[in-house]
Amino acid sequence: MRLSVPSEVRAAAEREIMERLGKLAEFIDAKSILAYVGNAVHGEIQTHAILQNVLESGKLLALPRVAGLLKAGILSLHHVLNINTLVRSKWGILEPEQETDEVVLNDIGLIIIPGIAFDRSGGRLGTGGGFYDRLLAGRICPTTVALAFDCQLVNAVPRQQHDVTIDIIITESQTIDCRK
Image 1 (cartoon, one colour):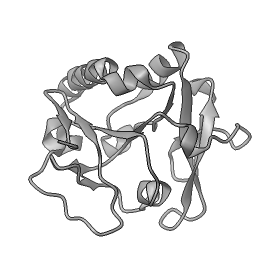
Image 2 (cartoon, rainbow, N blue to C red):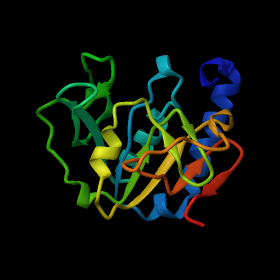
Image 3 (cartoon, rainbow, N blue to C red):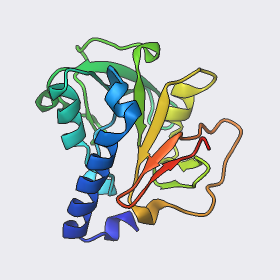
C-alpha cells in the first residue's frame, strides 16, 4: 500500500511527518539520534531531511550498517558527519562508510526505526531480517519512534516473543504514544 501512494501525496505526507517529528519533545531533547536512510524503492518514508536536520542542529547522527548476512546479521552503528558520504551496500541500502567511527547504543538518545506496518500498541512488522529486534533485545533503550504513512497502521501486527515494540508512531495525521 505504501508503494501505491502517489508522489505528490507522498511528498506532502512526508513533510507533515517531518514537522511532527521536529516538534516531538523526545526529538528536541535528544543529543544523539539513531536513524535510517529511507529506501524509496521499498516505499519507505524518505529521511534525508531528518538526517540533515539532525546534523544541522548539532546532534550526533548515527546510522546503521548491516554486518554479516542479510537475514542473520547485526547492525553496527556509525557516526555520520555528512549524508553525502554514505555508500550503497550490496543490498542497495545507503550506509555509512566502513571507516566511520562506531557508536555504542547506550550513547543514543532517540531511535528512529523503519517498518512495514504498525499497530497502536507499538507492534511493528519489519522486513523480516530481525536486525532491530536483535539490536535492542534485552536492553533498556531510549525512546523508539516509527515514521509511517497512515496506510501502514493496522489493527494488529502479529508478534513473537523476541519482537521489540515501538514507543511512538508518527504519521501524516497523528502522533501515537504507544506507551499509554
